[in-house]
Amino acid sequence: MALFGASFAVAEQGGRYWEPGTVNSATDRPRVAAKPVARHKATTQMHHLILQVNTNDVAAMNLALNNATNVAQYYKDLGEKVKIEVVTFGPGLHMLREDTSPVKARIEEMALSAPEVSFKACGNTQERMHKAESKDIPIIRQAEVVKSGVVRVMELQERGWSYVKP
Image 1: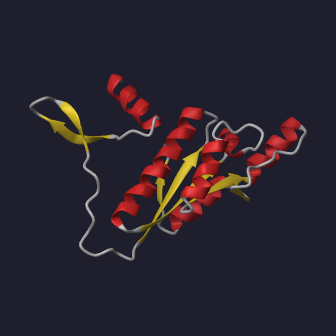
Image 2: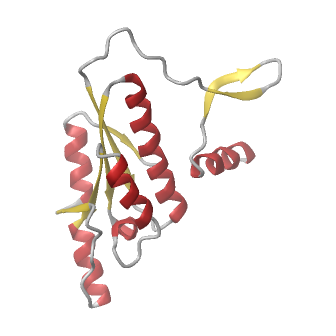
C-alpha cells in the first residue's frame, strides 16, 4: 500500500511512474523508465487515448491531466501523432464546469499548449445537475458537450481507441 501511495503521489505531481518489472535486484528499488528512443522512421500511425473522469476528486482530475500531458509528450518525442480525449460524466463533470472546476486554469493552459488533447462533458449529467440545482450548468469553453459521456467512451472504444481510467 505504501508503494501505491508513493507512486500515486508522484503521479499527481507530474512525476515519473514506477513500472512493474523494473526492479534492480541489487538495490531492490524501482527504476525510472528511460526516455523514449526515436524509432528509425517516424510512423504515420495515429494513436488514440480516452481518459475517463467520473469522480469529483481533484487528485483524480490532476492525474488524468498528468496522463494526458505525459502521453502527448511521449509521442511528440517519438515524432508520432496522438489524439487524447478526456471524457467526463457523473460527479466528474465538475472538472469541466465553469463554476466549480478546481483545474480550470490548468485546462486553459493545456488547450493552448496541447491541441491534441480535447475535453468532453456529458450532456446527460449536465441536465441532471441542472434539475438538481435549479440553475444552468456552465461548461468551460475548452470543452464540448456530448449527449452521453458513457456512450462517447463506448463509441471511441468501438473505433479502436485505448481506454484508461486514471
